[in-house]
Image 1 (spheres, rainbow, N blue to C red):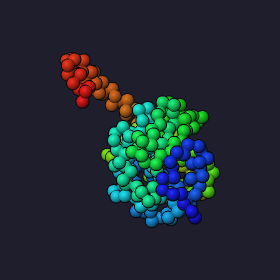
Image 2 (tube, rainbow, N blue to C red):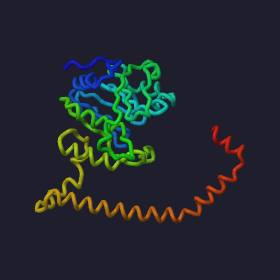
Image 3 (cartoon, rainbow, N blue to C red):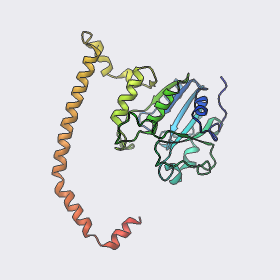
Length: 278
């Protein structure tokens, strides 16, 4: 199998160009920024013909330069990609071995997001993929899709021969990772697991080890739909109970929040200006 050369992302813009690039690999492993990632295990379990796709701040999952075939996806933002305006490009790129690094895919998902140039990425080979409104026909209207979710969907829609694998797509909160509320994490988890069940992609050490997936073996007399309906009912009830407790906490902290707002209004204007400039 002849694999793309390093820097192959340079000036790619058309969907078919990106499709042809991904189609040359046996596996496309999307590596989420997650505490669940075991890079040594991933490298061991997939062949040299696999492409590992990373997102933004790879230094949070890579402790040393990654030697395998790699591609970095950098999400556009209204003021440009975060690794650009935060000056982190060099720190990120040095963790992807130059001899196997295809380059950067700068992707945007809304018209408010602005592409960056290759010069912005310190002349790192860069291409662009415009996915504005790609998920708009079904994604919750008051939320925006994560980059990993959008790329998972786009890749499966391309019908490439490569196996698409999701690694670390758990949507778990931790001390290290935030689960930002602008995304609908529950919807994405449901969608991705349904995609896995439909055979469109694979979840690395995910659904196959799920205790819920094994319930059908314990209750063979029940239809899968009955088991799913029961799980949904329990989850719905628990979420309702959680919402009720959150409401109580909000009520209990009303006085503290009111006092905080009052004290903020009392703050002298020169202190406000000083705080704003920090």
